Image 1 (cartoon, rainbow, N blue to C red):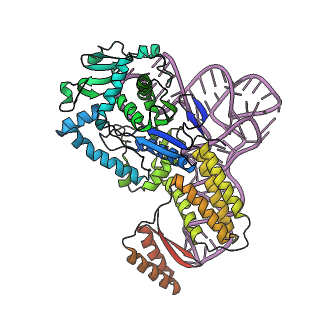
Image 2 (cartoon, rainbow, N blue to C red):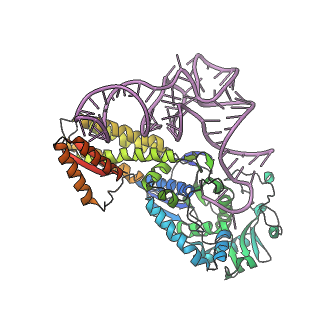
Image 3 (spheres, rainbow, N blue to C red):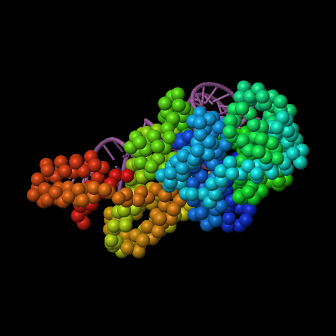
Length: 466
RNA sequence: GGCGGCUUAGCCAAGUGGUAAGGCAGGAGUCUGCAAAACUCCCAUUCCCCGGUUCAAGUCCGGGAGCCGCCUCCA
């Protein structure tokens, strides 16, 4: 089956055809570094990670850009409040962001451009827009002239006449020719403090939407394959990006737009006042594993809103444990019997997994294929009807699946290994003496330490709980 | 008010008009000193409600209810 994605621009699933065969150029909206990213932000980044990994799985060379928004109202407000420079204020959040994506095993993009180091590129776009009659200047502010861009609204299917003049438009912006026009460049004002750039356009700072146009076109070209982000960015952010980019370049900006739905927490919109607003760090501090969080965020198809619950996180950890136990048990299985069934099972799993993800990243279908695979191979293993060659074929499929899902939990170095070995030995001795009370109490002790024991025909095995 | 999405078992969640995947939880077994892991079996006559189209509807159409969003700097 052909690889298909739901393209917001077309409002339907479409076959994916890259501009250049074998390559995908992808722009993914990144974080505004005024705070630690929250669990909802990571839902988007995990979706983009799955997209990236599946494209690579399909054999595409992926060139991905993720921007860091380090200049906007919130970062200005933050650095002023702390009395530090903009860079001093945003730096720790940038560092934290990279730590967090590593924690969640989100693959690194090829480029992470920062808005503040791309001001000249943004100025160039504004100059082109002015030259093309699509932007105008009032008192040092530059605005995009929506009336002059007839296709405005094509992404979000917004009818401009239906837009209310909202309360969120600041009074000083009523000087715009039309309330719908949006800022490309904002002249310096007192509130901006020390944050400004001296440019051909005057002293000021860029509007938010402009950075994505400037940085995407710089690294990916004026016309590239895909652009993704949260559904809330569809309008106005992405609509404005299209207007700016196409208005400046004169050619089509992006072929495929993909938007992920929001995450809600315990059935409610995440908000600080409700107390269900979580950063990744806060959830880790509660004792949940990054792997389980990754699994939970990954396991719901990206266009469905995802209900994040702690019960769900527990269930995710269990599923993940099953996946990891399967891997480990398979690796340790020596091979037995005549075989004959397993390779067909493995081939089917690989095929169905790919089929699921090819269909607009239908992860539920893909995961169902994985769990069917696990059950079938485990059955053959328990029936001693799995040869060493068949085991290796199954492991290859598993590794290929893992290159996309990355659910494999690396055996973390256990710091108190000798202590555990010691207890395991003591329990084995007690068992030998049929002193089961002692043996069980040692096992309880190990359980409390997060160690799970398995008595197998090959002896006692122990592992750390995922 | 305008626009969009969603509603399937206790929870999470697939589902191309042809008779309800998968995961978690739960129940019964096999294995085990007991567990763990693993396997086997069971667990939705029914898909928010009401109409309609059809030989056939969770899927299509109409109406209603509820939930989550967007409507000018939120992933």
